[in-house]
Image (cartoon, rainbow, N blue to C red; front, side, top):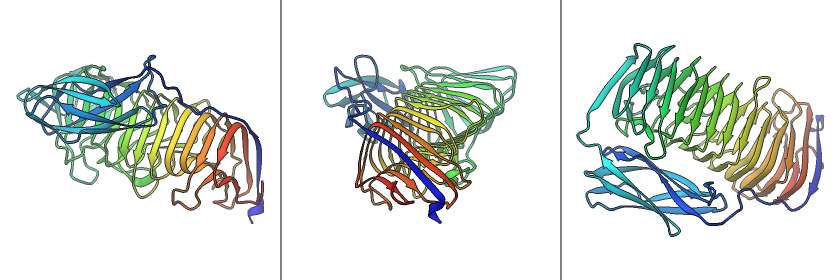
Length: 446
């Protein structure tokens, strides 16, 4: 019976300022590698920054128009869609010769010169690296699975283009297997790129298994995921971290047939990253996560297309998401299962199902979070193993809409799903909730 589960709601409402609402002197920034290979995709990232160098999240929707100054080079697209001041697109440049790429956003312009890599030498690699260290620069072609063994350091220099063999479909694309460590040292002026040798044949994944700490800075990882499936969606992974420490700084992980990644027993950091255009975002469990100033957008498909899915963590592990954006997904924004997380100063928007989904676990802390244009703002479920989910909502604004999902247009929802016993508790302070049903309980009136 539904009455086996109780719901408690403490609700205090007052005016809440939406996260990211600050417009001031702005300028555009174009993050793109300084060279191109004709016919290969180049990740073009456009940001609108304030006078402190922060992405202007108050710029809700915008489109950057791209152009080149050489008639000898054609662009596969001339548009980059921005969500809250940031967006990216995988652009194929076809032609010869150097050229200047420009991006214009609402009259703000940024430009970068790209040189042609035509005729540059290519180094083929595969198998297990030997010795204590390997240094990559120029153009690297990974022709089959590559292993960085324990005790070995692979360093990828700024501007390196790593082309990896893939397959048209299935899970046998070439992988990069790391037991030692990988240090990708891209810069804003010279990002590192890992992408498919042939854009029609996506590569496998980066596999970190009991690896030494690895880091990726200003690194664009595209056209991967033809690797063995795992977890939600069953899709292949772009990265898989097990009992490993991995840091991504100013990285873009975009345009994949699979999902962004998975982690177990790991320590992950994402700072100023963009995760976009995949089946779903990262799925993590027993893992510490610090995700800051990071955007997760455009996760599309037929099932479980969440921006991020967070299972329970181990004792002492923290999961914190700060100053970011989750936008435009075909399922949930932030999905949890038995975890305790903090989401602070965040925008969650244009979500087909639930902005935040809570399944058992907790407590879940939402502080200064704006959730808009979602079918349900926040839903807490009776867990499939019982449990007493607690959700603390402070200084948040939740505005739901009818997305066509059933149910839809709910503010906060006590969701009867598994028919288990327990208590669902919401603690709502200094917040606004606007929906057809601002407070919905499947267990009777709260």
